[in-house]
Image 1 (cartoon, rainbow, N blue to C red):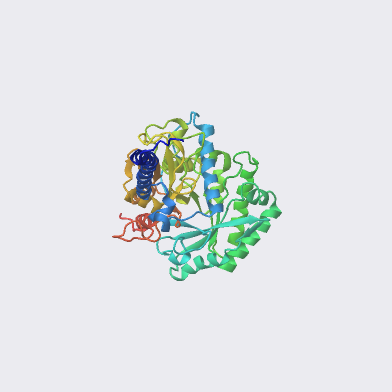
Image 2: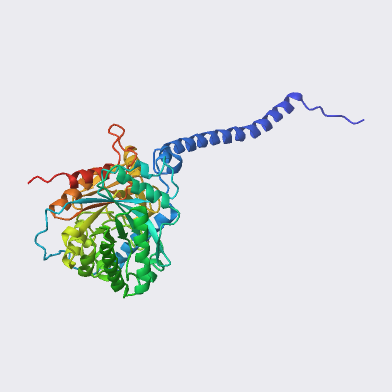
Amino acid sequence: MVNRIPVPQAKYELLNSVHQSRWKSPVICLTLVFIIVGSLFFLRAWLDILSPRNLESGPLSSVIIAFEDATIAAWARRARMYAESTKENQNADRNTTVTTSELSSNASTSKIVVCYFTIPGVLNTSKELSPAHIDPDICTHIIVGFASVVNCNLSLGANSEIYQEVVNLKKLQPKLKVMISAGGINELNYGFPEMVKTHANRKQFIRSVLNITKVYNFDGLDIDWEFPAWLGGNKRETIYYVQLLQELKKEFVRSGRDLILSAAVGAPAAIIDASYHVPEIAEHVDFINIMAYDYHYYVWYLPVTGLNAPLYPGRQETGYLATLNVNYSAMYWVSKGMPKEKIVIGIPTYGHSYQLYNSLNHEIMAPVKGFGRLGEKGFVYYPTICWFLSIGANKVFDEDSRTLYSYRYDEWISYDDRISVLEKAEWIKSNGFKGAMLFSLNTDDWNGSCDDNINITFPLTRTVSDSILKPQVE
């Protein structure tokens, strides 16, 4: 007979409870950990709405304007070309003071305010500026861009209706001049370089210009070739460029339609030296628009913060770096032979963003990792900058350069505000230049979102316009 050893029920239940507790305890702990981590994650995500991170899904998503690929590619390329001039010349022993032979200027010359309007990629009135929202009273000239040079002809592409809508603003302001800009992303290798090579090609282009300006009632043409003979271009392009301007002006006069001829030109001294025969250009254009911005922009070989459009050099800048400012560029053009009454000074309505390596090092020339999170490839619209300031970004006015930058966390932005553009406008007048050029209406706060209490549309452009165009007090 086999004796069975009874197992006490109490001991079995105790053992079972121990197994259950060993199984349940880790699960409960893990659950609590997930809850805590999850809560922290969602809290951080919520806080990120108030920071540059994940900006596109934050409250600014209705304000951010998506750059059309071709447009941002062209802007970024110009900025990189400016950076290339710095790379090649930053150690050059260049005289940083400019003396000009022109002691006086024709102060009675009427001032102008030139405004660029870039054709939106997708015309959405809630996010992109449409012609209907442009105030025709704040600019004396609106230059619409950018038309292309295709097979030696000026081409509007698929945007003819938008060009016509801008021209129609002249019905609201009869004194307004509306011009078309020829430029875009193809002029480096195909557009202008091919067209200017022969007299026959230039003649074909000029014929197309005369036809388009007549059909659409444009008041003139702006040549935006960035840049003749620069970065390995044909050296003869500088001659071809002058020939194009000469032949255009001759045919404009012959047409009897009082057409205006302007040119958007580079600001860095190295580009001016390489690309332009200044006295000859001055002979044929009505005015030039100096692209006095993009002086500093993130590139891998210059990974430091810099100011987009400083009026004067910073105290830490020497040699060629001390020439990268509005004052030097303008005076350099004068020293090369361009009359002041034909010089229009460019003012940007956008900023440049950088991502700092160390958020505690946020001075000018601080090390950076790359473009900032705000904007697109470092280009930031003014409404975005206003939002950045509204969430607590630190604002610094640099006394040397007379312009601003702001930072928060590792985001750093150089820009102009109403105070700094007003100082530039007053500087333009006091130095006897023809006027100011705003680039662009699209990147200004065109819907008045920056200040809900004032609700001013185009605050930067309007500030410059009010200063430049107001009657001079003798």
